[in-house]
Image (cartoon, helix red, strand yellow):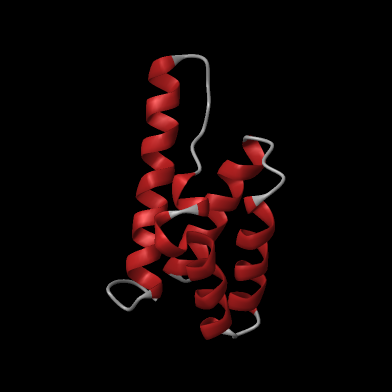
Amino acid sequence: MTGIRCLFERARNILVAQGDGNWIRGIENALAEWDAGNHDQARSIYRSMVAGGRGFAEYNIWIDDYDQRIAANYELDAIREELWRAINGYGIS
């Protein structure tokens, strides 16, 4: 499993656990393109999701317990940051 694929899966798992019905589509489409070998298309899909620091870049997890919410959002932020670096050629492939 490649690093980018793993990151897409981790993001998808978080969204599924949170019951997201919006951003999950983009992540799943990017993952499907990645698996099909269409890496440029997968990158394009993800870039469009976070363009201009909006959209998925602003998504956050709401959990009533403050400590759990902070931890969950920290994990998601780390995944998004690593995905961004990776798809833009600054990290894993």
